[in-house]
Amino acid sequence: MRAAPTILHLDMDAFYAAAEQASKPSLRGKPVIVGGLGPRGVVATASYEARRFGARSAMPMAQARRLCPNGAYLVPRFNFYRSISEQVMELLGRLSPLVEPLSLDEAFVDLEAGGVAWDAASAREAGERLRADIRAVTGLTGSVGLAGSKMLAKIASEEAKPDGLVLIEPGTERELLAPMPVRTLPGVGPATGEHLRRAGMTTVADLAEAGEDELVRLLGKAHGASLHRMALGLDDRPVVAERDTKSVSVEDTFDVDLHDRVRVMNEVGRLADRCVQRLRASGHSGRTIVLKVRRYDFSTLTRSETLRGPTDDPAVVREAAGRLLDSVDTTGGVRLLGVGVSGLADFTQEDLFAQAAGEQAGQEEPAVADEADTAVAEQAEPEDPAERRWVAGHDVRHAEFGPGWVQGSGVGRVTVRFETPASTAPGRVRTFMVDDPALAPSEPLPLVAAPEGPEGEDGVDQASSSPASLPKSRSGPAGGSGAAMSRP
Image (cartoon, rainbow, N blue to C red):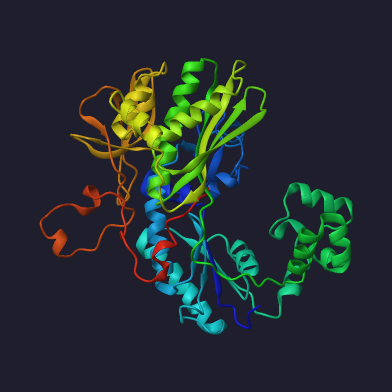
Protein backbone atom coordinates (compact mmCIF):
# COMPACT_ATOMS: atom_id res chain seq x y z
CA MET A 1 0.00 0.00 0.00
CA ARG A 2 1.26 3.45 -0.88
CA ALA A 3 1.55 6.38 1.45
CA ALA A 4 0.24 8.74 -1.26
CA PRO A 5 -2.80 8.42 -3.61
CA THR A 6 -0.68 8.08 -6.76
CA ILE A 7 -2.62 5.28 -8.49
CA LEU A 8 -5.25 6.68 -10.86
CA HIS A 9 -8.23 4.85 -12.31
CA LEU A 10 -10.05 6.39 -15.27
CA ASP A 11 -13.50 5.26 -16.34
CA MET A 12 -15.15 7.05 -19.25
CA ASP A 13 -18.79 7.96 -18.56
CA ALA A 14 -21.35 5.79 -20.44
CA PHE A 15 -18.69 5.58 -23.14
CA TYR A 16 -20.47 4.14 -26.18
CA ALA A 17 -23.67 6.08 -25.59
CA ALA A 18 -21.80 9.30 -24.82
CA ALA A 19 -19.79 8.96 -28.04
CA GLU A 20 -23.03 8.55 -30.00
CA GLN A 21 -24.59 11.60 -28.34
CA ALA A 22 -21.49 13.67 -29.06
CA SER A 23 -21.53 12.70 -32.73
CA LYS A 24 -25.31 13.18 -33.13
CA PRO A 25 -26.56 16.55 -31.82
CA SER A 26 -30.19 15.45 -32.07
CA LEU A 27 -29.56 12.78 -29.39
CA ARG A 28 -27.87 15.00 -26.81
CA GLY A 29 -29.77 15.00 -23.53
CA LYS A 30 -32.00 12.12 -24.69
CA PRO A 31 -31.99 8.41 -23.71
CA VAL A 32 -29.62 6.43 -25.94
CA ILE A 33 -29.12 2.66 -25.79
CA VAL A 34 -26.30 0.99 -27.71
CA GLY A 35 -26.27 -2.75 -28.35
CA GLY A 36 -27.63 -5.57 -30.46
CA LEU A 37 -31.01 -4.67 -31.94
CA GLY A 38 -32.11 -8.21 -32.80
CA PRO A 39 -34.54 -10.28 -30.71
CA ARG A 40 -31.61 -11.63 -28.71
CA GLY A 41 -29.66 -8.39 -28.49
CA VAL A 42 -28.08 -7.20 -25.25
CA VAL A 43 -27.46 -3.63 -24.06
CA ALA A 44 -23.79 -2.68 -24.31
CA THR A 45 -24.18 0.81 -22.81
CA ALA A 46 -27.09 3.00 -21.76
CA SER A 47 -26.79 6.77 -21.44
CA TYR A 48 -27.52 8.34 -18.07
CA GLU A 49 -30.83 9.59 -19.44
CA ALA A 50 -31.78 5.99 -20.29
CA ARG A 51 -30.62 4.70 -16.91
CA ARG A 52 -33.27 6.82 -15.23
CA PHE A 53 -35.82 4.49 -16.85
CA GLY A 54 -34.01 1.39 -15.58
CA ALA A 55 -32.01 0.49 -18.72
CA ARG A 56 -28.50 -0.78 -17.97
CA SER A 57 -25.59 -2.69 -19.46
CA ALA A 58 -25.98 -6.46 -20.03
CA MET A 59 -29.79 -6.18 -19.97
CA PRO A 60 -31.72 -7.94 -22.76
CA MET A 61 -32.57 -5.34 -25.39
CA ALA A 62 -36.22 -6.38 -25.38
CA GLN A 63 -36.44 -5.52 -21.67
CA ALA A 64 -34.72 -2.17 -22.25
CA ARG A 65 -37.28 -1.32 -24.96
CA ARG A 66 -40.12 -2.02 -22.53
CA LEU A 67 -38.55 0.19 -19.85
CA CYS A 68 -37.53 2.99 -22.22
CA PRO A 69 -39.81 2.84 -25.30
CA ASN A 70 -38.87 6.33 -26.50
CA GLY A 71 -35.10 5.85 -26.43
CA ALA A 72 -32.79 5.88 -29.44
CA TYR A 73 -31.51 2.35 -30.12
CA LEU A 74 -28.25 2.12 -32.04
CA VAL A 75 -25.90 -0.61 -33.25
CA PRO A 76 -22.34 -0.25 -31.84
CA ARG A 77 -19.59 1.31 -33.98
CA PHE A 78 -16.57 -0.38 -32.41
CA ASN A 79 -13.98 1.06 -34.78
CA PHE A 80 -15.23 4.53 -33.88
CA TYR A 81 -15.09 3.81 -30.14
CA ARG A 82 -11.65 2.27 -30.52
CA SER A 83 -10.34 5.39 -32.23
CA ILE A 84 -11.56 7.56 -29.34
CA SER A 85 -10.12 5.08 -26.85
CA GLU A 86 -6.71 5.37 -28.45
CA GLN A 87 -6.86 9.13 -28.09
CA VAL A 88 -7.59 8.71 -24.39
CA MET A 89 -4.83 6.12 -23.95
CA GLU A 90 -2.45 8.52 -25.66
CA LEU A 91 -3.23 11.11 -22.98
CA LEU A 92 -2.70 8.53 -20.23
CA GLY A 93 0.64 7.60 -21.77
CA ARG A 94 1.79 11.19 -21.37
CA LEU A 95 1.23 10.92 -17.62
CA SER A 96 3.19 7.73 -17.02
CA PRO A 97 4.97 4.84 -18.74
CA LEU A 98 2.84 2.48 -16.63
CA VAL A 99 -0.67 2.42 -18.10
CA GLU A 100 -2.79 -0.71 -17.67
CA PRO A 101 -5.84 -0.69 -19.97
CA LEU A 102 -8.73 -2.83 -18.78
CA SER A 103 -11.03 -2.13 -21.72
CA LEU A 104 -11.71 0.54 -24.32
CA ASP A 105 -12.96 2.97 -21.67
CA GLU A 106 -11.09 2.04 -18.51
CA ALA A 107 -7.44 2.02 -17.33
CA PHE A 108 -5.10 2.27 -14.35
CA VAL A 109 -2.18 4.71 -14.33
CA ASP A 110 0.82 4.80 -11.98
CA LEU A 111 1.34 8.54 -11.54
CA GLU A 112 4.39 8.07 -9.33
CA ALA A 113 6.20 6.15 -12.08
CA GLY A 114 5.61 9.09 -14.41
CA GLY A 115 6.94 11.61 -11.92
CA VAL A 116 3.76 13.70 -12.11
CA ALA A 117 2.46 13.01 -8.58
CA TRP A 118 4.04 12.33 -5.19
CA ASP A 119 1.36 13.48 -2.74
CA ALA A 120 -2.38 14.13 -2.59
CA ALA A 121 -2.18 17.67 -3.97
CA SER A 122 -0.08 16.77 -7.01
CA ALA A 123 -2.21 13.66 -7.66
CA ARG A 124 -5.40 15.71 -7.62
CA GLU A 125 -3.84 18.25 -9.96
CA ALA A 126 -2.82 15.51 -12.41
CA GLY A 127 -6.32 14.00 -12.27
CA GLU A 128 -8.07 17.29 -12.95
CA ARG A 129 -5.67 18.07 -15.78
CA LEU A 130 -6.38 14.67 -17.33
CA ARG A 131 -10.14 15.22 -17.19
CA ALA A 132 -9.75 18.61 -18.87
CA ASP A 133 -7.49 17.15 -21.59
CA ILE A 134 -9.93 14.33 -22.32
CA ARG A 135 -12.77 16.79 -22.75
CA ALA A 136 -10.66 19.04 -24.99
CA VAL A 137 -9.43 16.19 -27.23
CA THR A 138 -12.53 13.97 -27.43
CA GLY A 139 -15.42 16.13 -26.26
CA LEU A 140 -16.34 13.39 -23.75
CA THR A 141 -16.14 13.13 -19.97
CA GLY A 142 -14.38 10.63 -17.74
CA SER A 143 -14.46 9.98 -14.01
CA VAL A 144 -11.21 9.69 -12.06
CA GLY A 145 -10.41 7.85 -8.85
CA LEU A 146 -7.15 8.38 -6.93
CA ALA A 147 -5.90 6.18 -4.11
CA GLY A 148 -2.93 4.24 -2.79
CA SER A 149 -4.08 0.96 -4.39
CA LYS A 150 -5.80 -0.25 -7.55
CA MET A 151 -8.84 -1.56 -5.71
CA LEU A 152 -9.51 1.71 -3.94
CA ALA A 153 -8.80 3.82 -7.05
CA LYS A 154 -11.45 1.86 -8.93
CA ILE A 155 -13.94 2.26 -6.09
CA ALA A 156 -13.17 5.99 -6.04
CA SER A 157 -13.82 6.41 -9.76
CA GLU A 158 -17.17 4.66 -9.36
CA GLU A 159 -18.05 7.09 -6.56
CA ALA A 160 -16.99 9.98 -8.82
CA LYS A 161 -19.43 9.16 -11.63
CA PRO A 162 -20.45 10.95 -13.69
CA ASP A 163 -17.77 13.48 -14.64
CA GLY A 164 -16.09 13.79 -11.28
CA LEU A 165 -12.94 13.11 -9.27
CA VAL A 166 -12.69 11.37 -5.89
CA LEU A 167 -9.45 11.03 -3.94
CA ILE A 168 -9.14 8.55 -1.08
CA GLU A 169 -6.54 9.63 1.44
CA PRO A 170 -4.32 6.75 2.63
CA GLY A 171 -5.28 5.78 6.18
CA THR A 172 -9.02 6.27 5.62
CA GLU A 173 -9.57 3.02 3.68
CA ARG A 174 -11.25 0.90 6.37
CA GLU A 175 -13.57 3.69 7.48
CA LEU A 176 -14.61 4.30 3.87
CA LEU A 177 -15.12 0.63 2.99
CA ALA A 178 -16.91 -0.47 6.16
CA PRO A 179 -20.52 0.50 5.22
CA MET A 180 -20.23 -0.54 1.57
CA PRO A 181 -21.98 -3.72 0.34
CA VAL A 182 -19.82 -6.80 -0.17
CA ARG A 183 -20.43 -6.62 -3.94
CA THR A 184 -18.23 -3.50 -3.97
CA LEU A 185 -15.10 -5.64 -3.65
CA PRO A 186 -13.49 -7.22 -6.74
CA GLY A 187 -14.27 -10.90 -7.13
CA VAL A 188 -17.62 -10.78 -5.34
CA GLY A 189 -20.26 -11.56 -7.91
CA PRO A 190 -23.93 -12.48 -7.50
CA ALA A 191 -23.23 -16.08 -6.42
CA THR A 192 -20.53 -15.18 -3.88
CA GLY A 193 -22.59 -12.25 -2.64
CA GLU A 194 -25.60 -14.51 -2.02
CA HIS A 195 -23.40 -17.08 -0.27
CA LEU A 196 -22.06 -14.39 2.06
CA ARG A 197 -25.54 -12.99 2.68
CA ARG A 198 -26.73 -16.38 3.84
CA ALA A 199 -23.83 -16.40 6.25
CA GLY A 200 -24.96 -13.03 7.61
CA MET A 201 -22.37 -10.85 5.86
CA THR A 202 -23.76 -7.99 3.80
CA THR A 203 -21.21 -5.19 4.30
CA VAL A 204 -17.44 -4.94 4.01
CA ALA A 205 -17.30 -4.37 7.77
CA ASP A 206 -18.96 -7.77 8.27
CA LEU A 207 -16.19 -9.40 6.24
CA ALA A 208 -13.46 -7.69 8.22
CA GLU A 209 -15.06 -8.72 11.53
CA ALA A 210 -15.61 -12.31 10.40
CA GLY A 211 -11.89 -12.87 10.10
CA GLU A 212 -9.75 -14.70 7.57
CA ASP A 213 -10.40 -18.20 8.97
CA GLU A 214 -14.16 -17.87 8.59
CA LEU A 215 -13.91 -16.54 5.04
CA VAL A 216 -11.49 -19.33 4.09
CA ARG A 217 -13.98 -21.85 5.48
CA LEU A 218 -16.79 -20.35 3.43
CA LEU A 219 -14.99 -19.55 0.16
CA GLY A 220 -11.78 -21.57 0.07
CA LYS A 221 -8.21 -20.65 0.94
CA ALA A 222 -7.26 -18.42 -2.00
CA HIS A 223 -10.54 -16.54 -2.37
CA GLY A 224 -11.22 -16.25 1.33
CA ALA A 225 -7.75 -14.92 2.22
CA SER A 226 -7.81 -12.44 -0.69
CA LEU A 227 -11.29 -11.18 0.23
CA HIS A 228 -10.28 -10.63 3.85
CA ARG A 229 -7.28 -8.53 2.81
CA MET A 230 -9.46 -6.41 0.52
CA ALA A 231 -12.01 -5.94 3.31
CA LEU A 232 -9.19 -4.45 5.37
CA GLY A 233 -8.34 -2.12 2.49
CA LEU A 234 -5.12 -3.97 1.64
CA ASP A 235 -4.15 -4.33 -2.02
CA ASP A 236 -0.54 -4.29 -3.24
CA ARG A 237 -1.11 -5.20 -6.89
CA PRO A 238 1.12 -3.11 -9.16
CA VAL A 239 0.02 -1.30 -12.32
CA VAL A 240 1.20 -3.53 -15.16
CA ALA A 241 1.74 -1.89 -18.55
CA GLU A 242 1.96 -5.08 -20.61
CA ARG A 243 -0.67 -7.76 -20.15
CA ASP A 244 -0.13 -11.05 -21.95
CA THR A 245 -2.88 -12.00 -24.35
CA LYS A 246 -3.94 -15.57 -23.65
CA SER A 247 -6.39 -16.09 -26.49
CA VAL A 248 -8.13 -14.42 -29.41
CA SER A 249 -11.75 -15.23 -30.27
CA VAL A 250 -14.90 -14.01 -32.01
CA GLU A 251 -18.49 -15.12 -31.70
CA ASP A 252 -21.91 -14.26 -33.08
CA THR A 253 -25.41 -14.73 -31.67
CA PHE A 254 -28.06 -15.23 -34.34
CA ASP A 255 -31.50 -13.63 -34.27
CA VAL A 256 -33.02 -16.92 -35.47
CA ASP A 257 -31.65 -20.39 -34.73
CA LEU A 258 -29.64 -21.85 -37.60
CA HIS A 259 -30.80 -25.30 -38.74
CA ASP A 260 -29.17 -25.60 -42.15
CA ARG A 261 -25.88 -27.48 -41.70
CA VAL A 262 -24.34 -25.75 -44.74
CA ARG A 263 -25.22 -22.32 -43.29
CA VAL A 264 -23.70 -23.32 -39.95
CA MET A 265 -20.49 -24.43 -41.69
CA ASN A 266 -20.32 -21.18 -43.66
CA GLU A 267 -20.73 -19.15 -40.47
CA VAL A 268 -17.94 -21.11 -38.78
CA GLY A 269 -15.67 -20.39 -41.76
CA ARG A 270 -16.49 -16.69 -41.61
CA LEU A 271 -15.81 -16.58 -37.87
CA ALA A 272 -12.50 -18.35 -38.41
CA ASP A 273 -11.45 -15.69 -40.92
CA ARG A 274 -12.40 -12.88 -38.54
CA CYS A 275 -10.53 -14.60 -35.72
CA VAL A 276 -7.37 -14.85 -37.85
CA GLN A 277 -7.63 -11.16 -38.72
CA ARG A 278 -7.64 -10.32 -35.01
CA LEU A 279 -4.85 -12.81 -34.36
CA ARG A 280 -2.62 -11.22 -37.00
CA ALA A 281 -3.49 -7.72 -35.83
CA SER A 282 -2.22 -8.64 -32.35
CA GLY A 283 1.02 -10.02 -33.82
CA HIS A 284 0.41 -13.57 -32.63
CA SER A 285 -0.08 -17.09 -33.89
CA GLY A 286 -1.64 -19.98 -31.97
CA ARG A 287 -1.63 -23.75 -31.59
CA THR A 288 -5.08 -24.55 -30.19
CA ILE A 289 -8.27 -23.97 -32.20
CA VAL A 290 -11.47 -23.71 -30.14
CA LEU A 291 -15.06 -24.00 -31.37
CA LYS A 292 -17.98 -22.84 -29.23
CA VAL A 293 -21.55 -23.88 -30.06
CA ARG A 294 -24.62 -22.81 -28.08
CA ARG A 295 -27.61 -24.85 -29.14
CA TYR A 296 -31.33 -24.09 -29.22
CA ASP A 297 -31.78 -25.28 -25.61
CA PHE A 298 -28.98 -22.99 -24.31
CA SER A 299 -26.63 -25.93 -23.79
CA THR A 300 -23.10 -24.80 -24.70
CA LEU A 301 -20.50 -27.14 -26.14
CA THR A 302 -16.80 -26.37 -26.53
CA ARG A 303 -14.46 -28.41 -28.69
CA SER A 304 -10.74 -27.84 -29.21
CA GLU A 305 -7.89 -29.21 -31.30
CA THR A 306 -4.18 -28.60 -30.76
CA LEU A 307 -2.02 -28.34 -33.88
CA ARG A 308 1.59 -29.46 -34.21
CA GLY A 309 2.78 -25.86 -34.23
CA PRO A 310 1.42 -22.31 -33.98
CA THR A 311 -0.24 -20.87 -37.06
CA ASP A 312 -1.95 -17.74 -38.32
CA ASP A 313 -3.03 -19.33 -41.61
CA PRO A 314 -6.79 -18.79 -42.15
CA ALA A 315 -7.08 -21.97 -44.19
CA VAL A 316 -5.62 -24.02 -41.33
CA VAL A 317 -7.92 -22.41 -38.76
CA ARG A 318 -10.98 -22.86 -40.99
CA GLU A 319 -10.14 -26.49 -41.61
CA ALA A 320 -9.60 -27.22 -37.92
CA ALA A 321 -12.83 -25.43 -36.92
CA GLY A 322 -14.68 -27.43 -39.57
CA ARG A 323 -13.35 -30.70 -38.15
CA LEU A 324 -14.48 -29.66 -34.68
CA LEU A 325 -17.95 -28.82 -36.02
CA ASP A 326 -18.22 -32.33 -37.43
CA SER A 327 -18.22 -33.67 -33.86
CA VAL A 328 -21.17 -31.51 -32.76
CA ASP A 329 -24.84 -32.31 -33.32
CA THR A 330 -26.59 -29.16 -34.55
CA THR A 331 -29.86 -30.70 -35.78
CA GLY A 332 -31.96 -28.96 -33.13
CA GLY A 333 -30.69 -25.51 -34.08
CA VAL A 334 -27.79 -23.22 -33.20
CA ARG A 335 -28.18 -19.82 -31.53
CA LEU A 336 -24.48 -18.91 -31.08
CA LEU A 337 -21.19 -19.85 -32.72
CA GLY A 338 -17.67 -18.86 -31.76
CA VAL A 339 -14.14 -19.58 -32.99
CA GLY A 340 -11.03 -18.90 -30.95
CA VAL A 341 -7.29 -19.49 -30.96
CA SER A 342 -5.26 -20.05 -27.78
CA GLY A 343 -1.77 -21.26 -26.94
CA LEU A 344 -0.46 -18.03 -28.48
CA ALA A 345 3.08 -17.45 -29.72
CA ASP A 346 4.94 -14.62 -31.40
CA PHE A 347 6.05 -16.78 -34.34
CA THR A 348 4.54 -19.21 -36.85
CA GLN A 349 5.65 -22.78 -37.46
CA GLU A 350 3.99 -23.64 -40.73
CA ASP A 351 2.34 -26.99 -41.33
CA LEU A 352 3.48 -27.62 -44.89
CA PHE A 353 0.70 -30.04 -45.71
CA ALA A 354 -1.99 -27.70 -44.35
CA GLN A 355 -0.35 -24.77 -46.09
CA ALA A 356 -0.45 -26.61 -49.41
CA ALA A 357 -4.11 -27.40 -48.88
CA GLY A 358 -4.74 -23.75 -48.07
CA GLU A 359 -3.02 -22.58 -51.24
CA GLN A 360 -5.14 -24.95 -53.29
CA ALA A 361 -8.30 -23.70 -51.59
CA GLY A 362 -7.12 -20.15 -52.13
CA GLN A 363 -7.42 -20.62 -55.89
CA GLU A 364 -11.16 -20.87 -55.40
CA GLU A 365 -11.73 -18.50 -52.48
CA PRO A 366 -9.66 -15.76 -50.80
CA ALA A 367 -8.15 -16.92 -47.50
CA VAL A 368 -9.23 -13.85 -45.54
CA ALA A 369 -12.23 -11.89 -46.72
CA ASP A 370 -11.84 -8.14 -46.81
CA GLU A 371 -14.72 -5.81 -46.01
CA ALA A 372 -16.07 -5.84 -49.55
CA ASP A 373 -15.97 -9.64 -49.71
CA THR A 374 -17.75 -9.85 -46.37
CA ALA A 375 -20.48 -7.52 -47.60
CA VAL A 376 -20.98 -9.67 -50.71
CA ALA A 377 -21.10 -12.81 -48.60
CA GLU A 378 -23.66 -11.28 -46.28
CA GLN A 379 -25.80 -10.15 -49.19
CA ALA A 380 -25.86 -13.73 -50.43
CA GLU A 381 -27.72 -14.77 -47.29
CA PRO A 382 -31.51 -15.19 -47.27
CA GLU A 383 -32.04 -11.94 -45.31
CA ASP A 384 -32.91 -8.75 -47.13
CA PRO A 385 -29.49 -7.41 -48.20
CA ALA A 386 -30.63 -3.80 -48.40
CA GLU A 387 -31.76 -3.67 -44.78
CA ARG A 388 -28.53 -5.27 -43.56
CA ARG A 389 -26.57 -2.55 -45.28
CA TRP A 390 -28.18 0.42 -43.58
CA VAL A 391 -27.52 -0.11 -39.88
CA ALA A 392 -29.18 2.16 -37.32
CA GLY A 393 -26.71 4.71 -36.01
CA HIS A 394 -24.04 4.14 -38.63
CA ASP A 395 -22.58 6.90 -40.78
CA VAL A 396 -23.54 7.67 -44.37
CA ARG A 397 -22.87 10.39 -46.89
CA HIS A 398 -25.21 11.71 -49.58
CA ALA A 399 -23.85 13.28 -52.74
CA GLU A 400 -26.12 16.31 -52.30
CA PHE A 401 -26.87 16.57 -48.58
CA GLY A 402 -23.49 15.55 -47.17
CA PRO A 403 -22.77 13.51 -44.02
CA GLY A 404 -25.46 12.00 -41.81
CA TRP A 405 -26.45 8.86 -39.95
CA VAL A 406 -29.06 6.16 -40.37
CA GLN A 407 -32.13 6.54 -38.15
CA GLY A 408 -33.73 3.38 -39.48
CA SER A 409 -34.57 1.32 -42.53
CA GLY A 410 -37.29 -0.99 -43.77
CA VAL A 411 -39.73 -1.76 -46.58
CA GLY A 412 -37.17 -0.66 -49.13
CA ARG A 413 -36.44 2.74 -47.61
CA VAL A 414 -33.80 4.25 -45.35
CA THR A 415 -34.23 7.32 -43.15
CA VAL A 416 -31.20 9.56 -42.64
CA ARG A 417 -30.65 12.52 -40.35
CA PHE A 418 -28.11 14.94 -41.81
CA GLU A 419 -25.97 16.42 -39.05
CA THR A 420 -22.38 16.37 -37.83
CA PRO A 421 -20.72 16.60 -34.38
CA ALA A 422 -20.18 20.31 -35.07
CA SER A 423 -23.85 21.00 -35.84
CA THR A 424 -25.40 23.51 -33.45
CA ALA A 425 -28.93 22.17 -33.91
CA PRO A 426 -30.52 18.84 -34.84
CA GLY A 427 -30.24 18.12 -38.54
CA ARG A 428 -33.01 17.56 -41.08
CA VAL A 429 -34.39 14.08 -41.73
CA ARG A 430 -34.86 12.68 -45.24
CA THR A 431 -35.95 9.31 -46.58
CA PHE A 432 -34.45 7.55 -49.60
CA MET A 433 -34.83 4.29 -51.44
CA VAL A 434 -32.32 1.76 -50.12
CA ASP A 435 -30.66 1.51 -53.52
CA ASP A 436 -30.27 5.28 -54.00
CA PRO A 437 -26.91 5.61 -55.80
CA ALA A 438 -26.25 9.01 -54.18
CA LEU A 439 -26.21 7.44 -50.69
CA ALA A 440 -23.19 5.51 -49.42
CA PRO A 441 -21.71 4.31 -46.11
CA SER A 442 -19.13 6.69 -44.65
CA GLU A 443 -16.38 6.88 -42.06
CA PRO A 444 -17.22 8.56 -38.72
CA LEU A 445 -16.37 12.23 -38.32
CA PRO A 446 -14.11 13.37 -35.45
CA LEU A 447 -15.96 14.56 -32.36
CA VAL A 448 -13.63 17.54 -32.02
CA ALA A 449 -12.44 19.37 -35.13
CA ALA A 450 -8.70 19.40 -35.72
CA PRO A 451 -7.05 22.74 -34.88
CA GLU A 452 -6.39 25.03 -37.81
CA GLY A 453 -2.88 24.84 -39.18
CA PRO A 454 -0.91 24.43 -42.40
CA GLU A 455 -2.85 21.25 -43.17
CA GLY A 456 -6.16 23.08 -43.05
CA GLU A 457 -5.23 26.16 -45.04
CA ASP A 458 -6.22 24.70 -48.38
CA GLY A 459 -9.87 25.40 -47.72
CA VAL A 460 -10.81 21.77 -47.00
CA ASP A 461 -13.41 21.36 -44.26
CA GLN A 462 -11.50 19.18 -41.81
CA ALA A 463 -14.55 18.40 -39.71
CA SER A 464 -16.46 16.93 -42.62
CA SER A 465 -13.68 15.20 -44.50
CA SER A 466 -11.54 13.42 -41.89
CA PRO A 467 -12.55 10.17 -40.20
CA ALA A 468 -12.37 9.84 -36.45
CA SER A 469 -8.69 9.21 -35.98
CA LEU A 470 -5.85 9.74 -33.55
CA PRO A 471 -2.09 9.49 -33.26
CA LYS A 472 -0.88 6.28 -34.86
CA SER A 473 2.04 5.78 -32.52
CA ARG A 474 3.13 6.53 -29.00
CA SER A 475 6.53 7.14 -27.55
CA GLY A 476 7.85 5.45 -24.44
CA PRO A 477 6.99 2.13 -22.80
CA ALA A 478 3.29 2.88 -22.76
CA GLY A 479 3.15 2.78 -26.52
CA GLY A 480 1.87 -0.77 -26.69
CA SER A 481 -0.36 -0.69 -23.67
CA GLY A 482 -3.43 0.60 -25.46
CA ALA A 483 -3.48 -2.04 -28.19
CA ALA A 484 -4.78 -5.05 -26.29
CA MET A 485 -8.16 -3.96 -25.09
CA SER A 486 -11.02 -6.49 -24.73
CA ARG A 487 -14.51 -5.43 -23.11
CA PRO A 488 -17.93 -3.24 -23.27
